[in-house]
Structures are given as C-alpha cells and as structure tokens.
Image (tube, rainbow, N blue to C red; front, side):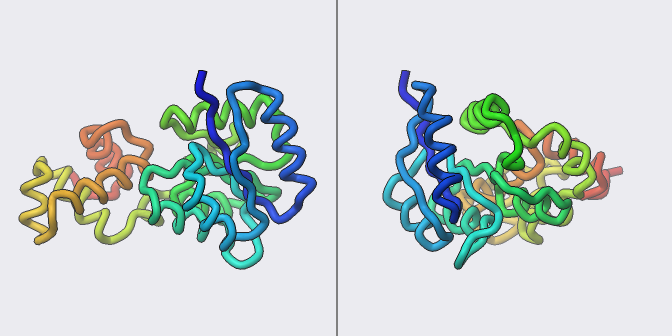
Length: 208
C-alpha cells in the first residue's frame, strides 16, 4: 500500500515531533516535509507536493489560510487540513474560505486525526463533529468569489461549460477551474448538486 504523504506546518517543534511520532506509527502515513513558518511551508510544498498538508492556523509570516491559498495557487488540487488551538466561527470560516478541506482542534484524538486525513485524501470534507453545526451556519455566499457566483448562476440556468465560457468571455478551462472551486466550497459532488445547493441556500435565485 502506498502511504499517504503528509506535510506538517506548525511553529512549535514539539507539536511537529508529536504528530510525526503518532502518524508514522501507522504504515499508511509518511511525513515527507515539515515547516515552522508560512513562507517556508509554501516553498516546502512546492518541492515535495505532499498528498495532505496539516497546517496550524497561527504562523509567523503567512498565517494558515494564507498558506492554503498560496499552495492552492501552486496546485488547485491541494488538500489541506487545519489543526489549530482555535475554534471560533471566524477561524473556521477563514480556513474553509481559503480552501481547507478539514478543520480539527489540537485536542482531537489520534484516531480522529487519522480518520480526517483518510477522508480528505479520498476527496471528502473532515470537520470536527462539534464544529459541524457551526460550519453549517456559515453561508457559502461569504466565501464564493464574485466570479464563482457568476459561474454558479449560469450553472443554475442550465448552461454547459462552453456556453458559460462564451457568456463570460473566458476560456472553457477557466470555467472548469472556477467550477472545481465551487464544488469544493459547496461540498457538492457535481454541478447538479451545486445548483440544488445554490437555490436551496439562496445563493442564486431560482428560475421561474
């Protein structure tokens, strides 16, 4: 079995050492890189391209959400989990808005962390159970960009990618790029589910 390649980003060495010790007790995990600050994290991601990035929320230089945005500019498929001591709604919101696929507090147990890693590695979202309700109250409208909302409106209208590209005067690849981010942010499996969520949550007016 090919191990899941992990990168640890935390400014406390003892935290990184503890995570490495716990995770590498399992053959399915391999820590391939570490970083103690945001700038080093982006450069390390560029070099190692791990499967999963475990990143602290508060970091010297660039903070966790900034790191997530930066690595997702390098790799739109980058999968990141925030592992933080903070669990305020604003912190969770910023992390998910940046593109994090998971959010756990550092008090989480080892099994919970491993389960989150497995879920995110398989393309799912992993948010600590006690934060789930808080996350559900965060409106997608707060973190979908204006461009993504435009694409979503066209999706709800039933347009295909080439039609959206023509209407927005952009390339089909640009539409696909925005659509991928929309699916991730709405936690939708496909464009049909994204359209249903958009109408249900009032992100886009229903067509009459």
